[in-house]
Picture: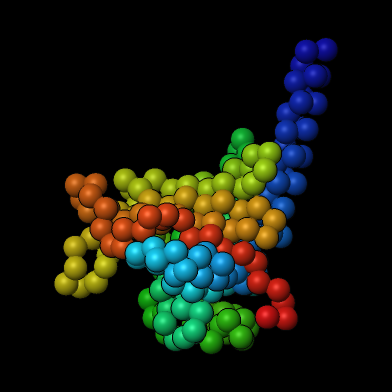
Length: 212
């Protein structure tokens, strides 16, 4: 009887994990903006203020990489040519209610920027077009109110450019309904924060209506 109950409990947990993963895959795609936050900063005289940004998460068909692939672009809202970040996220389900987000950078980012309006462009993607940012994986979980994700800042080491020292990136993410909040803190090798010293390091995005 104990073995039977344990099997039932395990099956129920596995079923919930499947549902939670499917929910994350459905919830992620969309275009998000942080205009309310940016306007509040400006009106309050906060320095440095958060700029107005658009965050786009586009689901792709890219079986050369994985089953669940997303093109993620962060850009200035008033100038779409000002790209702050563009990555591929690959999501997969692990055990114990954990969902792993692997992050990939492009070898030639400008080649793929038309992909937001023409996703079929990514059908030409081959493995050599991207490289995995090892150590920057985000572990997602679902709690009672949101999906939460975080990476290990100690192992996520990125390059700022040929003439710039490497830095560590600590990411935390919260996704719930129409809200998508992202905190990114850059530190040097000694753990000292670098970059804009925001009073609130969290960019508070809200899903944009399809007609906007």
